[in-house]
Amino acid sequence: MSASTIGYIKLANTLSIVSQKQVTGKLVVAHGNQEWQLYFLFGHLLYASGGKHSTRRWHRAISQHCPNFKFEVNQLSNNQLWEYKLLQTAIRENQITLAQAKAILRTIAQEVFFAIISQPGLTRRWHPQKHPCSQTALSLLLSRLEIKEVLTSAKRVWKSLQEQGLWHINPDSTPVFRDTNNFLIQENLDVFLTVKKLLNGDRTIWDIAFLMQMSLVEVARNLYDFEQRSLIYFKQVEDWLSPPEKLRLVSVENRRPQATIVCIDDSHLVGDFLEKILQPLGYKVVHIQDPIKGLAVLEDSQPDLIFLDLVMPKVSGYTICDFLRKTTMFKDTPIVFLSTQDGIIDRTRAKLIGANDYLCKSSNPEKVVEAVEKYVNFKDFKNSQIISLERRYNFTCLAVES
Image 1: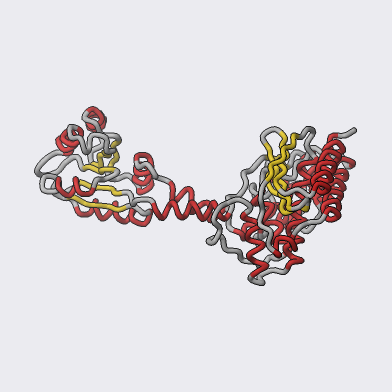
Image 2 (image 1 turned 30 degrees about the horizontal axis):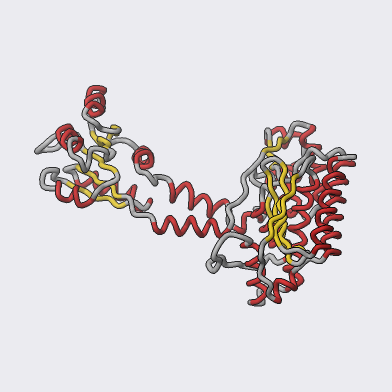
């Protein structure tokens, strides 16, 4: 008996028992470090989730059945069952129909069932839970017959993959070009351009099947052909952040204190230079031209990083650095020398008196930003997290570029 047959029988029997007992709660099905959650209300399926890419799966189902649906997550109190709660809200506000919502639930459940029955060994745990019992919730439930139909459909897809020798191709994996030039040589230009748009290094096989409006088996068969000719390979990618998690990260970023960068330099040009570079990135820049008179300003600023000039009219940067390192307030504050002098002796002396780094004033802006990111605690949060996440996980990322 094949692994898929065993998985199918186990899941089918478990679902039948839950239905017969008309229980309410959560069924957790696991294999290794993967876990799926099936939520039930009076023995009917409320929602299916879990696995590697639950958020990707949600976006695909939304795009398939109601592509114009623009959901808002501001009102969600927590992350649990956020997808289902959004569907309920959308129905109440007449954004989508009951038929569209149920189609979304069936599509998601089919992918979850497919993932479960394709595993060679499974563990099952039942957790009694209370779920809201509104009229909308009751209308969205998948009945025993509907569950059976979805499970049968998932088994049919898995069986087709097995029969065609494609069982090893995981639809959660991402196909990637080995060599685009080699692909272009072996294929005609139209095929190359189409495939290049799809195989962007982030889309899974499930994503590609949806975009191409082809069955999973058809897509897997074509990709297998490319794999056999060493044109592509498969890799694993992370799931997208869920909308509630993205909202939480933005909220955390908005609550973060603004990092303060102090520049001690007698030239106003250096202060202006640092402001132009760092202020657009969210940093506050304080410029002190007279280090003696500016000590009070330095204390009030409580900087996260100090850029310090080496040669100044009244006192040298070495003296200032040595003084700051002997104070309780600034003994651990990162200090980076910013100087026109760039000799090995200057660098060595700066390090000996406690400077963290040494930059030449002719350094390009990227070097300055790298120094700030290196020594400020929440250095790259906004740029490498929020901006990249909004770019990567935007709902429109499923669209094929024209």
